[in-house]
Image (cartoon, rainbow, N blue to C red; front, top):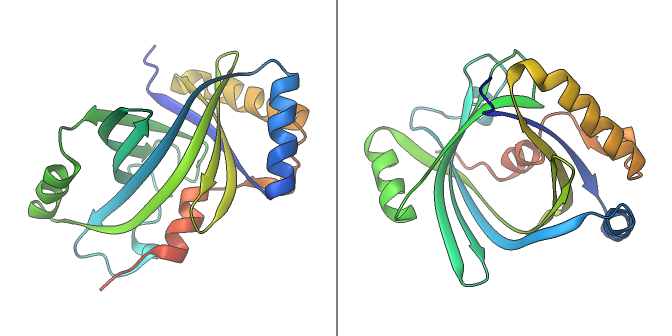
Length: 196
C-alpha cells in the first residue's frame, strides 16, 4: 500500500492552552525531535481573482507551496502539493514533495508557467513524536498558536488514522470546538490572500 496519504487534524490554542498542551505532551512521554523556523509561500494560477476560486474542496483541487525551513544551521527548501482525494475531506489528502535548490528560482519557474504567489506564512515549529503520530506545535506570526497532529498513511487506513488522532487530541485535553474543520492555513489564507 502506498503511504503518501497525509492524515491530519488541527486545533487552535491560546497562550494558556498552548502551555497546558505542551505539559500534557511531556506527561505522555512525547519526545521533541525538532525545532525549526518556516517560511511558506503559496501559489495559485494567475487567472484566480478570489480565494473562493482556489479553496480546496473538490477531488483534484490542490495547494501548491514553496517552503524554506531552517533547523539550527541546516536549511531545507521544498516544493509541495496536497491534493484532495475525497470530496470535502480536509483531514486526508495525497501529498507530494521534492527538494529544490533555490526558492527564488523555483518561484520564477512557477510564475513563468502561469502561477503567482498569493499568501506567505512565517512560523516557529516544535515537532514531537508520539507513537506513529507527528505532533507539530506552531507559533504563527501575526496569528497565534496552533497544533497539527498527523500520520503518514495509506488511503485505505485513513479512517483508522483519523480515529487515532481524535483519541489523542481528546486525551491531550483538546476540545471539539478547538478543532479546525479545514486547516489553520485555510484560515490564514482567507485573511492574508491578496489578489489583483
